[in-house]
Image 1: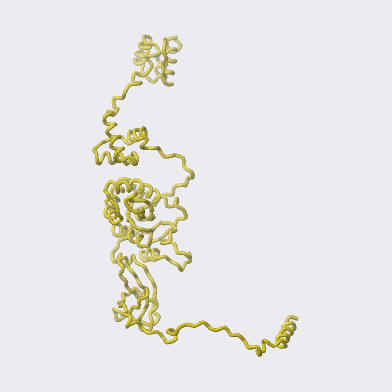
Image 2 (image 1 turned 90 degrees about the vertical axis):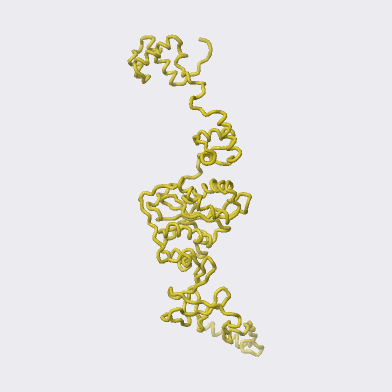
Length: 424
């Protein structure tokens, strides 16, 4: 037979078995078992093999278009839409927008192949430089909340880079709080914590990195950051990670957000932090529908906010000492302190706790009892003692006169002799 035949290994094995049957070296029953077909099917194959030879074994579908293949016009239309609107999207995300915005239903893997053909998608390198063992998830929702700030060009070239504060539950991968801010500061952590508390309540603990907001400059037991003071008041535990991989749940969420949220903001036409914070809640709900997991235990361990004023908890705390005139100084301003309750006695040296809320309101507390603060004018500023008002002058260096005994050679010689006797 002239020409060349392309066969698969399976087809080549079939030819060998059929040749043995034709040479009477193998029975039809045994050959049918090896080919995994019935006796009648084997006789049909042998009949065609006698007529067309080895060519009959080759699949008739080879080289032909599949009956389930997608129309080329539809393929060109889809790639045109993806190239025009979603050129930097991944196949999975681009497929979601095709389904929701263009009513085009297609397999994600098919779209991945098509995007790879026109170099719109390059597969990620599957080799990892370093492996880290996975930590087991917490069992209940609200048991541990991972927190982090993601610095990125969230609005691309439409605005300056900023930070996105992310709170995510460890047990379910549910994002519980999102907030845009200019910097990763105490206020941005408080704003995101306020969103979490209003939506879910008080969790058992938080898990973050060793940034300046969570870790004091001098790590001593007496040094506590403002954020940790707030968590202590809420009776929440704070755990600090030693590496980014330790809080991998929130780090992976940041990577997803830097891909999906950036494109979502672009399509929505958002170009500022204020506009972004308005639509974050809507995006958070859509994100959780796609990426949330079921916890191993179906219960929520968040505690209720009953009897707790969130605005008075999310604040900075400072301690001031009360003077004999019931006056204290805070941020270069003198305040007169009054007691609103008769049972609260104010005295000199009392330790007053000053709280400044997110909206700039300042309150004073003595043993958790609210006090009234009234700023004093310059005319009402308390007069200090006369000793404190006098200007400090450096003390002049005393220079002994020449007639001083220490200047006398005889006196110094006697001192040396006495010292020698003492040594001996």
